[in-house]
Amino acid sequence: MPVEEILRGIRMGVRKVNIDTDIRLAMTGAIRKSLSEDRSEFDPRKALLAAKKGAKGVVKLRFEAFGCAGRAARIKPVAMERMAGLYR
Image 1 (cartoon, rainbow, N blue to C red):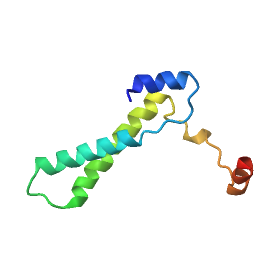
Image 2: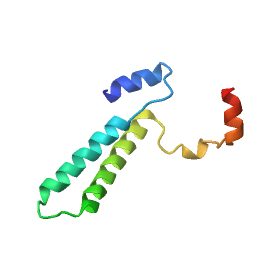
Image 3: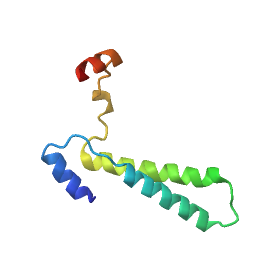
């Protein structure tokens, strides 16, 4: 889904956005690129490092686009018992 459409949803009140598909696509693309650039390299850790960087880049872009970058300190932990009570 285009980021513009997600932003439109956020403006309309959406509060939970899944970006897993974007992350998986970025990781897969980075792995493919890494493996194709040096065909003699067979250490999977190098391809996985590229995948990690790809995922980090997408997450950073999405957090910035959605306006939640740099706001982690505002998240208040809730004890499991209390959270379970909220679902009852």
